[in-house]
Image 1 (tube, rainbow, N blue to C red):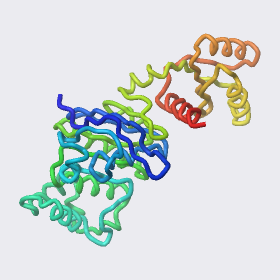
Image 2 (image 1 turned 90 degrees about the vertical axis):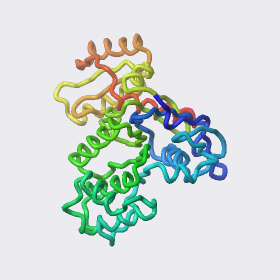
Image 3 (image 1 turned 60 degrees about the vertical axis):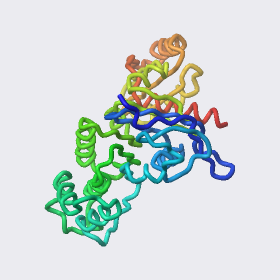
Image 4 (image 1 turned 45 degrees about the horizontal axis):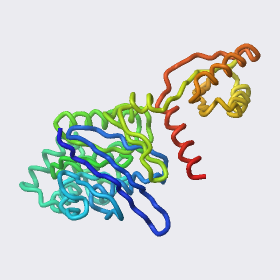
Length: 311
């Protein structure tokens, strides 16, 4: 299938700081790419280069078949970009906001397009409600409607579900998958691992560098982690916290993540971690159960690796 995004070596500097460092991404038509990474990792800067809002200092490639440097103006008019913060006018109604966006993009048959978009996103009954009076989930729906009004082939969504309730998140992702089934390509940044698992592919960036790409299964396999669920008799918070500190001091342990009344304990040397398990089960009465690493386990490890590389 056609690559809607195909960029290589994207780099952006702000003074002495390199915000994005040689990032290469390819996303095919109809694909949903989850763009992951900690705050300040370069996700938003990368998205802004892809949609023509920022000029890269180095790198090359295309977005929607258009050169990201020479054709930045055309790209801006042909993508739907949903920013982290709600950016529409809160003192205008839903309908008025969409009519304004339709005028900006010179959408043909503007009123019909607005009516169709209101119906598509289930906003018709609220069309005269002020945007500032909407809940987080309805604001999110309005922002997505504004992105879709000019019929883009590519959606760039920057943490679109931050601060909305689980029901709104579920409805949002159902809509995204419906759009992808119709051929829409989506790049979405998120901090939620359950959302990452909904994506066709993942790309993880830290300190401006792309660390890993692939499906969720490929990313987990690439990590090389061996993971156990570890519990203690009684499962008290104090006992669990003490166990976590003790395990973090073990050379064979690379990741310790609390999960309810248990810990997820991971290492990259399976044999060494097995020796730790045997000793602690024998001496401490702990319960160790082997599991597949989760995306949470993998990404905690990736964050650690990025910090170690920067140290």
